[in-house]
Amino acid sequence: MLYIFVKFLYLVNIFTQFYILNSFLGSDYTLWGLQTFRDLWNGREWLDSGVFPRVTMCDFKVRRLANTHKYTVQCVLMINMFNEKIYLFIWFWFLFVAISTAINFGYCFLQLVLTSFREKSTQTWLSSPRHGDDSTDSYRHQHIMRRFTHAALRPDGVLLLRFIEGHAGAMVAREITMKLFTDYLEQMSYNNPGHSHSTKSTSPGVIDDGLHENLYNSEKLGGLMATDYPTKNI
Image (cartoon, rainbow, N blue to C red; front, side):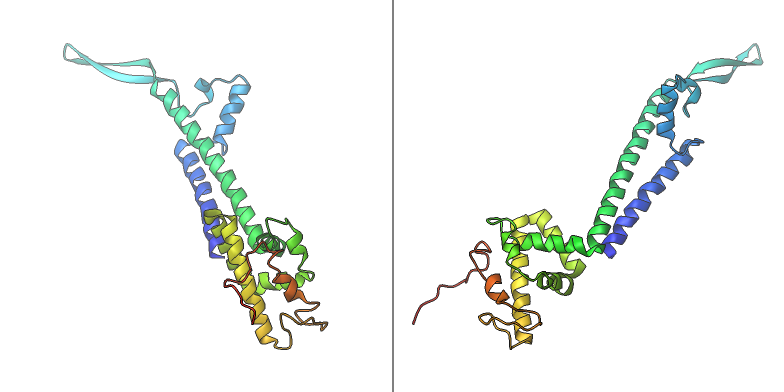
């Protein structure tokens, strides 16, 4: 949940910057950038609608013969043409960042909250690239995979594996998941000594119908769960 909270702070940050920008510009429009384009579409010039005026009245004084004369003339503020374009770019950049952050926050929130997303990720990591989804079909009872996802990995573990997949690649994440799944099955067998890897069980417990034999089939799992050391027949 800390990860989601940080994502939420990103979202709060960008909308706060939106509010500060509008307050700094002093515009009556909350969506100042969109309103500027709407004015252009309706034929209203930036000279009249913009926050940055192009033309204004300037007062200046001229001293002549010991007298000070005050003049008011029309001035052109060329710098505001550049200022308006710069702030317009900043406004639309904030808009792009806000939309991207909101989409990313929603996607990450759904991935961590919805169990179906976590189960789908685990099923993908447990699948073999050689056989597509055929290796996952060997887990005839999907409750084993679900229990592994929710009891062993849990949301933090699934999130960590996603980080590993993003930085080290899908193969590394798949191998780590396979190893964790193997250890989980061994722990289940240790806690249930009546169920062994070579014995088929019909009890309504955790493992039945020779599930361990199928799970440890190195051909279906692409060799990832093959024995580390060569065996010798005696």
